[in-house]
Length: 465
Ligand code: CO
Image (cartoon, rainbow, N blue to C red; front, side):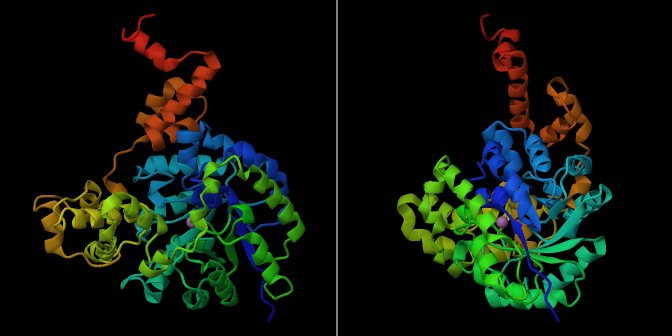
């Protein structure tokens, strides 16, 4: 039986620069390649979500909604895709349900086609509302299984979580390996097993960090995966995805042929290469080295480099800290090492070693996690340990975390009213508050040629006019 053609999702405009250039690519540098990208015939182009929304407002003085509108306009033939952290949307905490619904409706209204929804704990309760809202708004829901390595993550748990996703309703399934630790033969087994009962396309996302990713994609393709994530060569490899061009070349003339035009893709890559010099991050060659520590310790590369910089002249204690990570992870019921849990586990492991006593100091994040505010831990948490950390009186919630949140949208609408030009501004503000407000004020000051910060001070008498 002839195999279906393999599709490629191009990640250059999202994960590519998020992984290699700290998410700093400006919309003006995307613009020159949009129409060409639109001609390629990628299964989809990932260009929004993840850290891009925050970075637009915080560092680039750009409106992320304008980026979405512009890309939509110049890429009418291609499915646009984004990454969404479930109830965290594109931010770093759980938002109230009304914010989730409003944000996603606007997102689909502005032309987003496919929303990849994930939760770091694979807790369906943190994903369900987002998934249903995307569906109701007419979008394509890509349910995600977060891949991790631990005693409680195995083929059976992935199968049962996938069944939960199918029950809610998904249009495609993503296996997401953010650390690049999914090995080729494991990928083969996983895809094969999922293919037995998943009747929607399966897509694989991994990172090149450990040097395994191209092999992993190839084995997954042999097992029947439908779409693989790659980036154009100037923004591929290292901590990013495998490159598009070799993947197209490797599959040419095989039953998995992508049918994509290598010449056209090379032309786009040439244009991307030309803008590389504008980004100082692209000069950092260390991100292109195979990270053997990630391979050995199965931890994200960012976590290990954080330890190295935090330890400073105590670098000889690195092995102790690295050995503490799996112990902390076990105590916390094996959360996958993905945002925010990689930071949570990392800083706790560091403190446990540096303070000379385990859990002498405990971060609020760990306490909130143990009180259930992030969702259900994948594994077991010892009750005595939990109480030792949060105290006997602290309330532990077992309900869906967002159920304990009050609505936030109306307050956001009021607080942003003065600077609001469009409904999307409310979502920007609800998500990023002061960061968004600063952007909106700057936009307003450009319009009226007033420095609102100074004028505000003058109004309060703090600045002589
Ligand atoms: Co990624």
